[in-house]
Image (tube, rainbow, N blue to C red; front, side, top):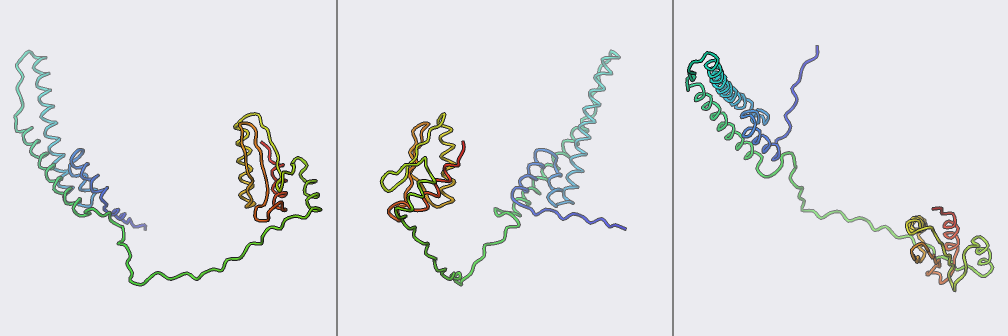
Length: 233
């Protein structure tokens, strides 16, 4: 046979405490107290608030019924006893004040620190020092000899030599298309860790590739140029 287990109440936080206070003062006195874990006080406040509401509602109904009956019968209306609304107002005011006291108690309970947050850890010992990882030197690019340059230019016929660099001009229908092309080139350059000089003039883009570390053209320039030639916008 399955047994019913009561769900644990969520931890009381500053936000919840102020929410329960708002429910008590501006909605239903006692409901916020009950939701905040003060079930006995909340139940008592709810009883008083409901009793006050019912007494005031009954007085209003009797007043309305008396006026309607008097109009229909052509007689003077008789007001119901004032004790109805007086008792209702007293019970509701008692529930409201009681729920206010409970709400203030909930707010004071949490103070200014949200519940459930652990205090910061303190330690007198210094943090452990990480062992230094030796850096692996990256091989320097090698400048291509003349015979290798000829092979490189055969693989990128649209590019031309300009000193120790290769250059190509691109033209597109409009500026957005030119920028879309440049963005794709930037992604390729980041992946290759080799960045061209880029000149943008509305729908025209000029790319210049050279390897400054080697003082001229290397295989990195021709490799990136071949990848750029495949870009489509």
